[in-house]
Length: 135
Image (tube, rainbow, N blue to C red; front, top):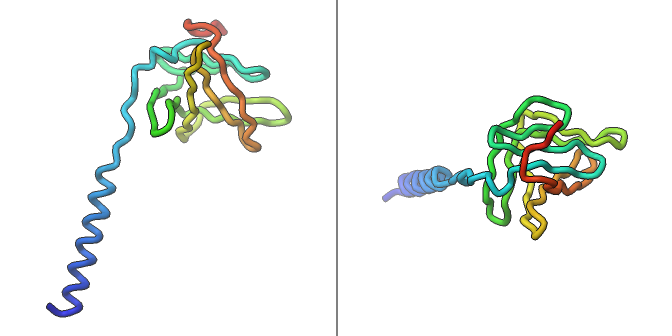
């Protein structure tokens, strides 16, 4: 076999193998959100209501769809919610992109950790009740 044909065969098998590897990537399955439903609060930041129809941010009537997922190292809230900080005020708003917020399960209940841009100030949102927030 000539070197050129051998090279074409090797490249074809390499590209085919790489494409097969990409096709085998699995998005984590959405989990039953029942363990994380409720009203969450963090000091100095807007509250979050996580309900069966979506996440609602204090001051808004919009319910943002979300997924409760188990990733490789933790549970996450996968939602199109952007967290920003401006002049010392924390803001949560609907976003175009999906963001992943880790969830810790503690003896007191679930805790959602949110980092606020631009300086990544981290706030822990503690569940205050299992019912949705009353805004």
